[in-house]
Image 1 (cartoon, rainbow, N blue to C red):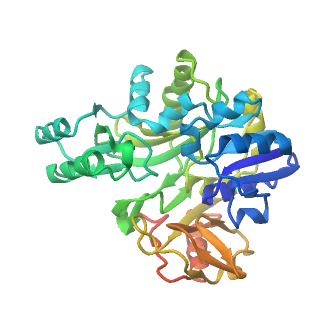
Image 2 (image 1 turned 90 degrees about the vertical axis):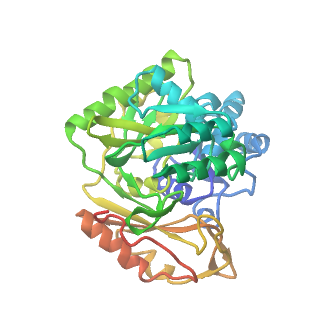
Length: 420
């Protein structure tokens, strides 16, 4: 099979690495790809927003499946566009992608389909939102920009002042552009957070190992939200909790998209809080998580491409997932200034000491190659994944590898996989 991956980050590098292992694969392609991905895939230099050029490339190269990594092309309708040209896509329709592109759409979908989630209210006007906040007596409260914000459009506000600042930033200053034109004000849930990802073919789902993401920039969950600073997998859940997730959330999702005639083939990612009253959905994402994917896929024994193929062919119910009996810890190395104003162009040293180490995997998120050197080229730079027979062994292995890597301004959390 000829496969095209859309995207260029650490998640897509990991997906390419895993798909490259499949005996079903003939050729692997990536748009736009990255210097790291170009070592294992053909990268033609096309923009991921140029749907017409992508379709032409797919027809020219006889691409059998397009796997869409990031949420933005999905929200803009790449799935519908390519499907309309007869190209098979692993990724939902534009209407399905609204589960992530609009918090309001997702929350109302959950409400209609009795999927457990936090109480919420959608607010369209800045002044009205501020009045609602001034009358609010219960803190913390969660303020979310309605649209896409690269994982940074959520504020947990512990006071009226913080909530008012979030409204001002999102709705008045428009720090996330049109995505903040309306907000969702949401009940704050307490408990442990987990990331639940499942394959979906429109009729059934197949659950991946459960992981946990750490979004805050600093140790002990301090600082601002980021796209993700690290992840661990698996997160062991009680069988009762797993059954609730499968019955009330994932089956509820499948029933909901069927009832509402939403075309959906791809990944559904539910960020959940394990509350005293059971698991509740914080948000839906419509693609593989980042950096959760980098923690989950190294544990997979199953052929990822075979599962993806079964999704687009509508026979997911015949598939099972096999995993190694190991644990993984992923730590994200970031640039100085991330997430607001990351420095770029810093030389990265030490990668050669760890890239061939057993049970250590490096996934490039924001790097470039110049004069045989790796340089930083973004906010999140390298994902360092360590595997071990215990969670602590995986954690130690990842941090041991990090000690060999350096670049000016390198930042990372020291507590991923610890007791946070």
